[in-house]
Image (cartoon, rainbow, N blue to C red; front, side):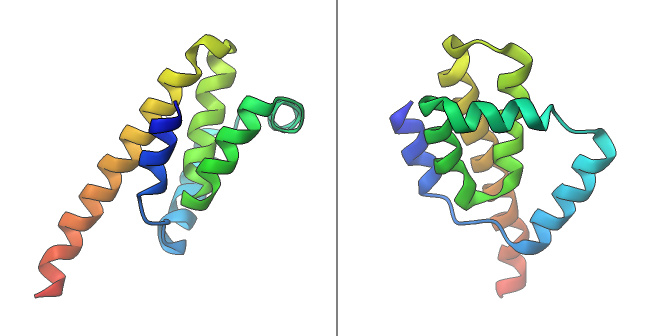
Length: 105
């Protein structure tokens, strides 16, 4: 899991525009149990450490992690969840780089 968190740290932080678009989309889809999530982050060291690693890259990834963890509610899946979030982040970052490449010329 540490290696996956390090992979995430190698990605650049998200832009405010992308973050705003995500917040709008999330509000349309509904949110997870925020009170339960906040308690987990506050009192569970593993969850708190992962959230701290994800936060610099945008609330989008924290929310993805939160929704997946709360759906499964089993720490045995933490590694798999982080792996999925990191994979999504890498895929989205690569796509944004492909879109930006023609504009650089």
